[in-house]
Length: 285
Image (cartoon, rainbow, N blue to C red; front, side, top):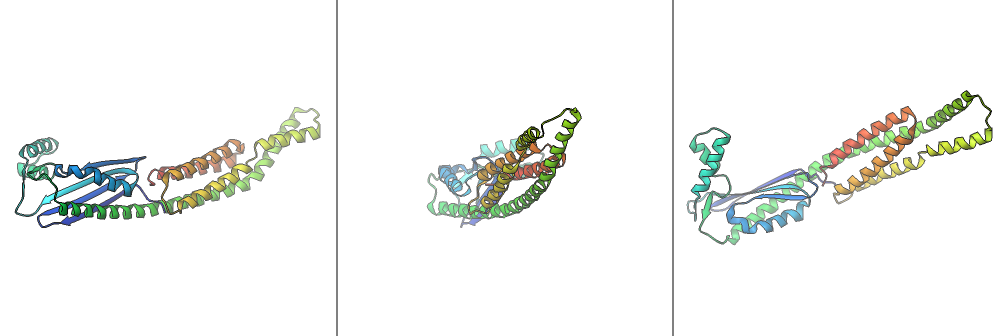
């Protein structure tokens, strides 16, 4: 089943003296783009945390937030006063507030604490990894739920396109008869004698140029292939995008060959439905 690239996952771990919060947000993007907000003390683990995200989320614009709050009385950290003051100065330029409120907001920002510790405690880092795993599970569940919504919308659009294709098929006979009548009328208005056999040969040749049998068959096949890919085990938005391009190519060819107003109106409806599919395709993993 397909997955959306939009998602949110969060997990909180309470240690004896710290509360660790991991938040992961994702939006649609052509490639994997990870933006990480990690306290300075944990920067050495950033590459490993990025690899965890890349192995699970594959694609999208990802925002990772790792927040560590000291809750115990004992701490090896102290307030980085220069950083806090700089944050307070910047916040005061954005919105008014008393110093206590500004300091409260500033202390939530990265790198406001400096620590004498050089090494990350292994049990603490294990807790961070566990929080990351849980947040990744949550965001994957979110993406799957959003993907189900997208899948239902695609199925509705596919059904509409198939219904419109049936209209195209029913109009095709009427269209050929209409073209034939227009040509015969145009020839009769010339008021010259025409070899009937030669005229019939030329007429057949002309009508063959407007034949859309192959386009109708290919369009039906593309719609089936889109649905099969939609229901496959892997979410492949790029593949669905390629198939939708092929669908659009057949619809455009039918429109260029139609030469019949009622059919061209149906083609416009098909293009509208396909455009809605392409818009939603941007969110598919």
